[in-house]
Image (tube, rainbow, N blue to C red; front, side, top):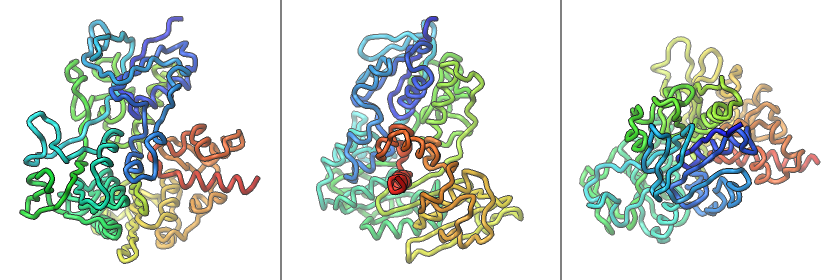
Amino acid sequence: MTARRVVVVGYGMAGARLADEIRRRDPEGERVALTVVGAEPHAAYNRVLLSAVVAGTMQPGSVRLHDDGWAERNHVDLRLNVAARRIDRRNRTVELDDGTAVAYDSLVLATGSRPWVPPVDGLVGDDGELAEGALAFRNLDDCDRILDAAKVGAPVAVLGGGLLGLEAARGLAGRGNRVTVVHPAPYPMERQLDPGSGRVLARTLEGFGIDFRLGRGGAKYLPGDGLKLDDGSHVEADLLVVSTGVRAETGLAADAGLDVDRGVVVDDALRTSDGRIHALGDCCRHPAAPPGLVQPAWEQAGVLADLLTGADTASRYRGTSVVTRLKAKGMDVAALGDTAVTADTADDDTEVVCLDDPTRGRYAKLVVRDEKVAGAIVLGVPDAAATITQLYDRGVRVPEDRLALLLGRAMPSAAPAAASPADLPGSAIVCRCNSVSKAKIIEAYRGGASTVDEIAQRTRASTGCGSCRDAVCGIAEWLTSTD
């Protein structure tokens, strides 16, 4: 049997995960001859953990997804530091910028996204690159550049108060920089939070030495001096970190004539308008996939690996229910489901319970529909976040005492608080990104994976957004104590 030639363009988190999933189903490459093309010179790495690299809590090598011998062991033709230049659909080849071409039977676009730069005067030079002293925060090389430029104690401005911008701000503040976040919305993380939780989050981050200029945008960048805002005020900064969102990288697809609409349009089989070409991750647009998050990409990778290897030809991607977490030292923020509804806008079938305690850095909102969690925002109450997430994942009934749940004191038998690993049921999902249950972690431990890193290697728990690492550590410690 001749192996099917599959070419993956993009060796980021989505492309690397797809390669792993294909080899899980076809370890020896008997069904799929796999080529992976990566524009960066590095092995694939976990982009979600870059804020930890900036903060100094993780080394660059520790966020790698593959070691140097991965490709050879897994029969993968890995081509690093080379970019795809053109897709020849008629001849089914991909032309690379090193002058070579790769033939395919099936092509997968995992080209990810690129930083979006707002129209701030002086921010972009004549060459189209960011001006001196302004840096994007998107890849591993950006981390090196930011750390080289951010001298200890120097003022730094972060343009953008979304998830990634706040993680960068917290990391730099932890290194001793004086950080000011400039954000056009009235509160940070407005896509995930409501006004009450946004205010509590800003106040909490101010306690870590981060200043905010909210409801303001950048008007003019002055290299070496800082940022002039649209209200005429000025933010002093030796370095400007730009984290104002991303746009799907669709140039290659558009040039090839594929359907593009704010992403490469795909169906439930992740097929583009050309049935031999698929797309996944940040570069694709599926109506039920939340943008910019790792969990949808990895679920898509599993579906696509089923289809490309023939392991399950009925496999389809139907969408992802995402829990968003802010991963910053000293902060615990979770948002899930329908967070926009309020007590004033809720219908008769919806109950909204809210706890607002800004003095202690706590905020919790619970949206209940049909006696189940329909949405929640939890800030500063990690036990409550863990329990509510379990209830949401499993679709079980919410306890009658809603306030006790928001305070982290409710421990229903269906979903005990994750503060006690021994109390978690085996079916409890510990790592949502990889759908790893407590039972799978126990199985890996009993199979010889005694450390957190070994458990991660065996199960992939904690290799996604990283927010479950403390829970994995707790389970590992509990297992060690019971031996």
